[in-house]
Image (tube, rainbow, N blue to C red; front, side, top):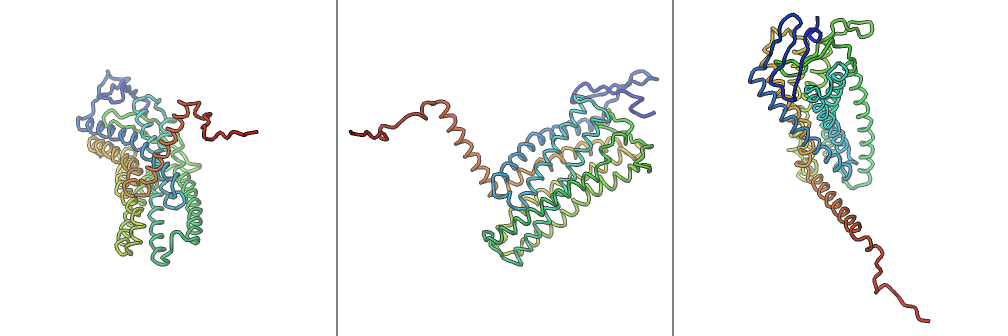
Length: 372
């Protein structure tokens, strides 16, 4: 009998202190998480909620600033644009996760599958877009060194347009490949049931050992290792670290003028790389939860690490907009100019609304009398 069939879990609030388990064979048993797990849960949840609010705000402002500036014409501006979009998707999926925990959204295989897919899809897209950004910056540095071109020349404009098209095709290709690699997450029958673990305080899924993918028995453990751990996290994070090390080395050996022009985008990438390191540990925990015997792991340590890195991973997705504005002066200038323009437009509309007759006033000096 599966865990979902044997027990029924009652979650009374968003911050559950204990859970009541109704066993059909025994009297009610109250399980409480250890104090250390409870502290880690609350800290991780508070950090996550803070990141959700300010991360969505910062990334939305970044999207607006890129759209209103010349950044949208450059390939790295497009990459930052899409990174911000999928960071927002990841943050929203975390808000959805906490609503599932509180049962404000019914917890079942369908709603859990929706969370798992959008959580993994947005995370994978974001990680690989950062790798593409690092590769694009490496190519930009190489082009600066070999050609020394003028960024205002007509030839440079054509080059940027060509790069922009290639980047859009590459992003579309990434969307399709990620959908293919993540499509098993769209199949609810992979799991027998899903519930909230009252001791670890996170959602637990029971894998279906008899699930067939076509004519073959689905190997869930191999899928988690290949997709969640290697393709989604370890490989892109490792590549990011390698490419950033190369970029920082090349930046030190560039001419001063060239270095100033390209340094801002490299510092943005460095910010994003540092926080990307936090995404890897939770994939290992997912594997342990699904396919490792609970007797072989320490529930308290697993839960503390999970909730701690839940908050740290949210920092990775919330920091994008703020890292870009802190590292790039032109983005800050674009944002301030846009805010100033919007304020002037609002003041003009407000003045016209408060003084509707102002539009019809005719200055006496403009009246020319005609004599017969």
